[in-house]
Length: 217
Length: 215
Image 1 (cartoon, helix red, strand yellow):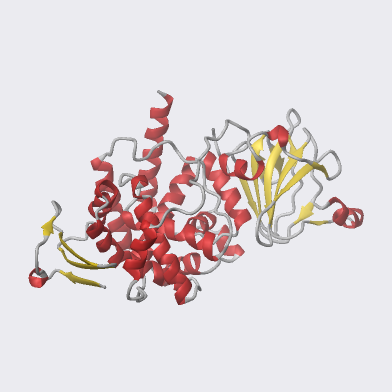
Image 2 (cartoon, helix red, strand yellow; image 1 turned 120 degrees about the vertical axis):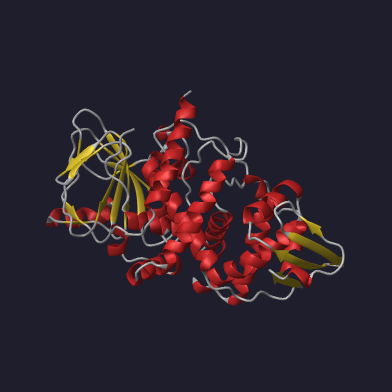
């Protein structure tokens, strides 16, 4: 059972730890059940995932789970899966988040984006039972030195992207709905999307050029 | 590599969203392997997916969901660990090597007439993905399309009335396009073509031969 208190400072009982990013975490373990009581001052998903990656931190994982697992389940159900298949797949996705945490690179993607790609691939693999052809991976990843500046920019871009989506005109919102929860028509596949992704695209393009340049040296 | 013909934005969005059928996903992944512009666009659309999840509806979890997830985490992994083999340098981009192997010489071609050879890939869904080998200077017969047709050049080049397509270029065509692709005169052309329905050839003889050739 999980109880999550957001922005409630007095909600904590018993011993607790405060991580360096201001997140107060407490775990109390009884048998197989984890009781996580936490106060989230700031939803710094990147810091939490790095704690999972670097310290196998179960409390940090619990906080990520509380936020993302219901959203993954919601995403899968909206894509047409049953509640039980979606629950099963959401647990599977979150277990993958734990196991693949060492592959997470905050200078490449936000936590939400990374979790989305795992959920998308599991949906194709487990629910649609199809292969997911992936592009050739580029040799950048956690082994490369973490660029704090890049990570911050990615986080900021994602915040502004979320804000931009909230203000989209109805036809563009409808296009996003169809792309993520149904199939686009042939006509839609051939069209421009008109979605406001200009800055994030050019930033990623620049990062790719820098990488290509490094590989040439 | 200078690429002039790209995937449409709609295709990149659907690929990033995971809503494209397998054969279209394959050609999208192959083009993205060769094209930084489309890779950047796909990454941006994945960020959109992250925002959609983050902003989307939550569904209530089962009561012991977290405990069950921790149990999955502790369970010994099923099956063999996934070994990622480094891809060999090849005319075939990495996602295609997963279907055909690394060496072009090992592809099992089948003649389909006029020196054109093809190899159909195993993909799920109503689409067909095929590797085509078109001899230098050869024209593939004029045909209309039953739906969306994507063609990615892997070696050589071809031209039709909409333009010239070189290595890395992808042609996105629908049923309104009638074209006669002609391979460049100096080099054989190898491309990956994905069609949604059988190509409809125009002449009676070609129509009669179509089931036989399997084009």
